[in-house]
Amino acid sequence: MRIPSIESPRALREQLMLALMRVLSGHRAPDVVRTLRYRPDMFGAPMGAVFQEVMRGPSDWSIGERELFAAWVSKKNECEF
Image 1 (cartoon, one colour):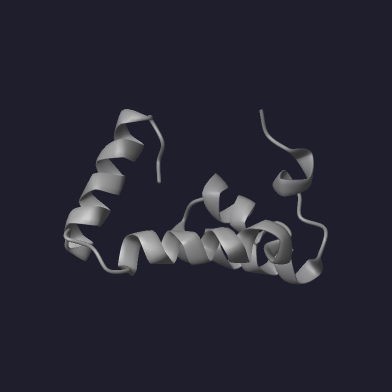
Image 2: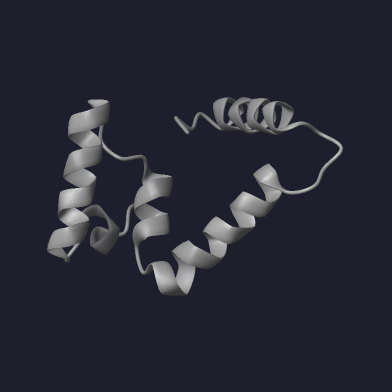
């Protein structure tokens, strides 16, 4: 199920950002990007900080290993991201 307000952003700046992503990549912005950019003060910024810490913070795993593991999990979940 997709939340309609995430599918069609209200702010012009947000619409332009998503359009630019589409033009530059040739694809629609992934749902995870749309979700993180929706109400960034309430959800996007805190979750972005968590993702940054998990993927780039101190760990026994290298950044490459973490990225590879995240890609593998996404593939198993049939997620494009």
